[in-house]
Length: 142
Image (cartoon, rainbow, N blue to C red; front, side, top):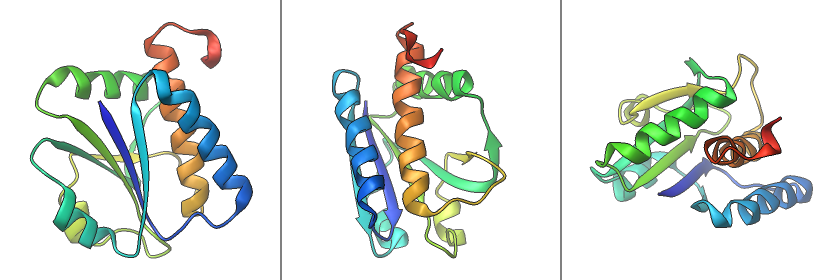
């Protein structure tokens, strides 16, 4: 399964970049993860989301999941057979426009708290790594 994280804006702080790169490296044995920093998520969605893309939008109003539930969600998408990639969409300071939200297969809330978009990328990348450790019955998540 290919996983893409798309954020509106850039990861500017070096410590966030280092953290994201570390978890991307750790994920190498489990999945392919690519990060896209774009000026407009709407344009990315219009040009890159296909019928075999499972789109997850990060929204404060979305559904909260525990780490094991998040891992199960990834497993369900992988085993469904209809999708060859998962695309996570993280909006900028104004959030996501309705047209992007309408393309979502699943609205996900990492917390009731609001995060910087670059911080959200780091947390999400770590949670994806944690999910694969859980799915493979490995000890990281304990």
